[in-house]
Amino acid sequence: MNLQRVIIIGAGPAGLTAAYELSKFPDKFKVIVLEESSSLGGISRTVEHNGNLMDMGPHRFFTKVKEVEDWWKKLMPLADVSSPDEKILLKKNRFTRIFFRGKFYDYPVKMNATTFENLGLGETLKVGMSYFKSLLFKRKENSLEDFFINRFGKKLYSMFFEGYTEKVWGRHPRDISTEWGSQRVKGLSGVAVLKNMIYKALNITPKKIETSLADSFYYPKRGSGQLWEIAAEAAEKNGAEIIMQAKATKIHRATDNSISGVVYEQFGKEFELPCDILLSSMPLKDLVAGMENVPENIQKIAEGLPYRDYMTIGILVPRLNVTVPDHWVYVQGDDVKMGRFLVFNNWSPSMLKDPNTIWLALEYFCQEGDEMWTSPDEKFAAFAIDEMIRKNLISSADAVKDYHIERVKKAYPSYFDTYAQIDELKTYLDTSTNLYCIGRNGQHRYNNIDHSMCTSFEAVKNILSGTKDKSNVWIVNTEEIRRCFHSRKVV
Ligand SMILES: Cc1cc2nc3c(=O)[nH]c(=O)nc-3n(C[C@H](O)[C@H](O)[C@H](O)COP(=O)(O)OP(=O)(O)OC[C@H]3O[C@@H](n4cnc5c(N)ncnc54)[C@H](O)[C@@H]3O)c2cc1C
Image (cartoon, rainbow, N blue to C red):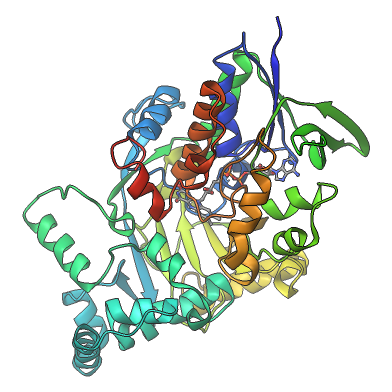
């Protein structure tokens, strides 16, 4: 049998979706996945620490794409949390709030009794006036700052968006393009928030749900990574090979630019694998760095792509000073560096070894190599625990019974610097006709799990049909998709 050899770089959601889909055709393809780390699931992995399970930040499974939802449910049936089966998807009703000046506010922030009560009359009037001003005088949207002010007014923006956005991206919203805002909080505005409140009061399900207002989501009983462990198992059962701790370092190309093979490093040794097709979910920056004879202007674009890195610390305590029923909480204000914290008890009981404890995680956005990233674990833990005390979540460091720290490189592909020239890079990469760039960092696109998976669905469709045009793979989760794919399932 003349099988086509397909190499997939990365065993995250995008890589494993592609591996599983292609492994359904064992008479056509030999599928090999190379994964640099020792975990499956990429950023959506779940790690175990002393019997407690921890995700890399809150990972809710939410999608508007039926193909994705069906895929999840096929691998993990939906069941009630009381089911003794551990390999199930739970349906959760999202509950998240904002913690600001010691008080909890609804997320997204709403003009309701809680907000008025928390802010007091004077602040409420200022918020209302600045909101109405934003309705009357629209700014030209040159930056994320303009985007937020146009939708919430300057006062609410300065309270709830300015500092938080800067924490996440390490840049002021005035220096960030509106593209991120329109992708993440599309349609979200004072008016959308009001509409959502009315729908809720009347018990109506709106036809189109804005991403940030989505109320329910799915969650694997043993953490977000469980679904990817099951997907990997299913792909392997179909004959796919997954090579762990194998870092792709060089991409070989033939004279016509098509990919001819991949070199990977494992345990200090180099191995070379020839291939007919390559699907890459590794960061675009690293992919291009691994290629020879790349024109200088393209190299510069790839080298200049920016990322935001991420650290999270799981903390085990007997109890918190405040009751937190939330899945996660946004921490506003510049008195602490913590961006959010999540409470795993509220996601699934299987995340905890002992249900009589509280297992939570604090989240920090940082830059690989900066002071936070390089600080020794004990120092970082002491700093994070001190922030919990300052926020009155616990009273003293003695309350902490255990902790675990995870560092996530390139957690957020950012939309500044050479990102403005990314189309040139994509056009160049498309000259390698058998290369498909998939996923989040694989496309340098702020994709969630579902859109990362859709890039793989589209790539697999092209491989199966022999289509050479790859625009359908690149335009997942972009404005163009609405124009080109409005009659298809992927919207
Ligand atoms: C804090 C946070 C919260 C999030 N919350 C949500 C959420 O609630 N819902 C949601 O849908 N999405 C969420 N996401 C996004 C989600 O994590 C990503 O969309 C998803 O993991 C992307 O999948 P991927 O396979 O494209 O990339 P990744 O998950 O990054 O996987 C890529 C894989 O490639 C491997 N790799 C990289 N380089 C190489 C190499 N050279 N050789 C071999 N292997 C390599 C990596 O080790 C990794 O395993 C969140 C992300 C973050 C950072």
